[in-house]
Image (cartoon, rainbow, N blue to C red; front, side, top):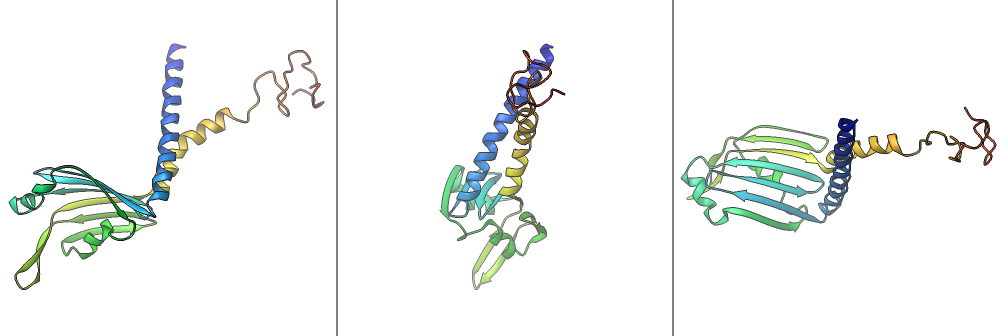
Length: 189
């Protein structure tokens, strides 16, 4: 009995957390069409970036395999958060232009990229550096749908079902008259 109570407690907590995450995802989804958000952690070895822009959440990891890339981001080490107008700069733009992108896939708003990194001459005496990175993009609608599963399951189980001993049509307490509901006249099952 105690195990069931603890399990019910944790399932209820997970459902409540899922509701909060679902609402937050929908809010971030709507916001992503006006304002793009980026959260970035940069260290000497690499960086991790989370970007919400135009209905998609993208997570990217990059490695700095030498001093060339590591020194380029020396001023940006640590946590950084920034915002800009949505659609101005997309995380996909770097992968589309990156000649070292060897694998990429996209369908229904989902994206996946793998880049090996390269230094490319862009003109006389100038180069552009692309560092090795991996990125996964998931549309906000898919995250919202995933977070809505637990609340929908809980709602289906707990709401709309009559309590035992109550009329299934109107919910009236049938303990005094178990044969027929005095409120709506329906016969008890």
